[in-house]
Length: 508
Ligand code: ADP
Image 1 (cartoon, rainbow, N blue to C red):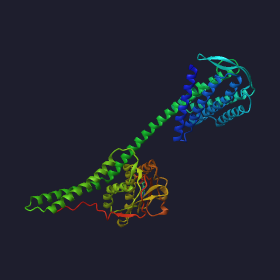
Image 2 (image 1 turned 120 degrees about the vertical axis):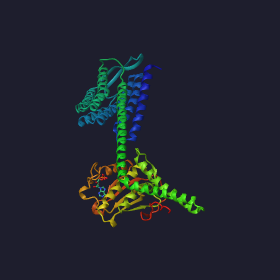
Image 3 (image 1 turned 135 degrees about the vertical axis):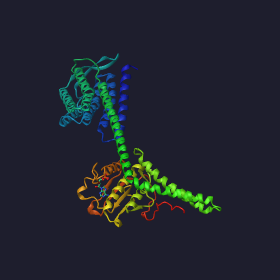
Image 4 (image 1 turned 180 degrees about the horizontal axis):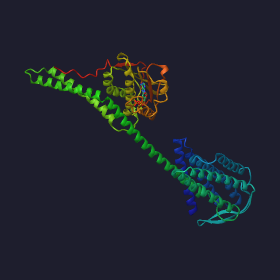
């Protein structure tokens, strides 16, 4: 096989692979039109390579004319996709100029199929044999060019004017990144376009003798722009990772701050089982040291020690999980488990402030996609805010309710936190989700902003009801359900009055 055939086949193969990769990227992110344009450019480049191959191996002028006529289609498509790529990629340049260039080029392609033998020539009389990389290939020998060709020249001038305008405007925007992009487009598309167009017209008007080819330019532009997009993807990914890391750090700081607020009641909560265990150990030793140890009493003491130990470990484990730095990992999990985790940590604080905490869990709730630590953080934030809000109410009117229900129609689970505090005043409706907004003297003002981000990363929503619609504040958040499970619409009720979190009384 001759070297030209090998090179052009390789070029076409590379273009097809690039088109497939860019097409795949576009299917993943359809809003990014730059990848779609590169996909079209890749296909057009490969088809152009095939048609160039046909022209080069034409035996007669008529055959050559027919290949050339089809050649207008992929080359027109390649030009339009390049112009649109620059438009989406740089976001600069006069739009009317772009549309004028696309329109003119489309006219060339359409008229090309209405005339004979093609847009540029009135007649191709004969072919000549020229050498391309050592291979003898066919090129136009004697031909009569058409007056229409000046329209094609004008369309190329419009195209070059638009690309120059877009690159210049981008360059003038200043900044290293803008200038780098403007330079990439100039060197990758504009300069080769100028060179190829001039070479094409020199061939066309018979000044030069050689084989017509746009493949090196199309392929070069495709690879340069694909490199640019790849670079952008890597930089975006890096920026996203850095943002996620910063968010994880902020979330950890916020969790530690909330746990700091709960520290004294949690320490008290842990001191109780420890004191009870110590007293129970003494009681057990006394029994063993006696003449006739009561084995039943001994086993009951040991059971109590075991229960106290488990309860204290549970609290410590939940706290330890929240102290750790942790990026969001979505897994199927039970909302009820998250609510119970948080209730375990917050209940001592609620009890010390005379707040009744009710948990209303719909039985058979479906699993949701979520991260246990981050969802605990959201719930902890909402409950800490509610605990703070109900402080202004009399002791017997302090109530917080956490409710979880499945919303079958939307395929979600909705969690509601409702309190009997004063609610969110109308004047603050637009403020509370803003970072660093707080009405508390010791508040950081990032709880709600962070919670909303966490829920949005989970694909859910976090919002509150307007004050006019209810007494107190009502916050809702939704989570996508992970799997189907049998649903029972009844709710079951767990009040802190029913659930004992008090350490077992030590034996005398
Ligand atoms: P912080 O708790 O540090 O103030 P947040 O972002 O959690 O930060 O809350 C912002 C503000 O929203 C609070 O300072 C408060 O004014 C208001 N807010 C939040 N939850 C409630 C609630 N349950 N009742 C009344 N106001 C609330």
